[in-house]
Amino acid sequence: MELKIDHKSPLPLHAQVEQLLRQLITQPEYQAGNFLPKEVDLAKMLGVSRNTIRQATNKLEYEGLLIRKKGVGTKVTQQTVTTQLANWGSFTQEMNEQGVNFINYEIKASLENVNGKIATFMGVPDGTEVIKIVRLRGDEDIPFVYFESYIHPRVGLTIDEDFSQPLYDLLEKKYATIVTLSKEHISARSASRITAKRLQIDQGEPILKRERFVYDPGNRPVEYNIGFYRADKFTYSIDITR
Image (cartoon, rainbow, N blue to C red):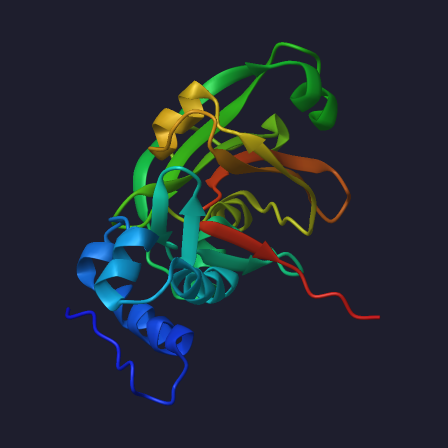
């Protein structure tokens, strides 16, 4: 793509640069994650000041189209998945509502002895054996969320099920267990070494941690779920009405 502006045009230079950048960031090489040319190089190529370049890039950064890493460079922001907190369901249901196709990179079920927080939530003694379901999911490019689910033994779930299907559909249709309430805790944290490896990011990068405490209509615990999301690939939103 040729980078050129018209110095005789009545359109302000920063607006012309902004238009060029909007075209530039649609190019496959930058959509693939390559860094944009440095501000000083763009300024030389276009014959404008660095302040003019910065004014244009600031606009695109404000719109969420660009992300700057100090001392590293500027990249196109990766498309994120946005989901509403007002309505919740299984991950599959959330993605279907957004029209997002996802891939199961890993699905594994095992028996786990639970202690501490999980045992307390379920109201069972420390050391009680429950079903643990591990799922690593993402798009065709990269995994963006890692889940661990622990199911109350009262449900009767076995490790032989097909856990690629929506979990709550499985619980309702085969085990007559309906979930109606989810109490959630969402926080930001730095990725541990293990989580970073799973999500293919650098250790210490920001991630979203989401805990779910899921109940049936009788307010009995059904599932404890913890998920770790890539912060650059996932956004939660909530509508608040006064």
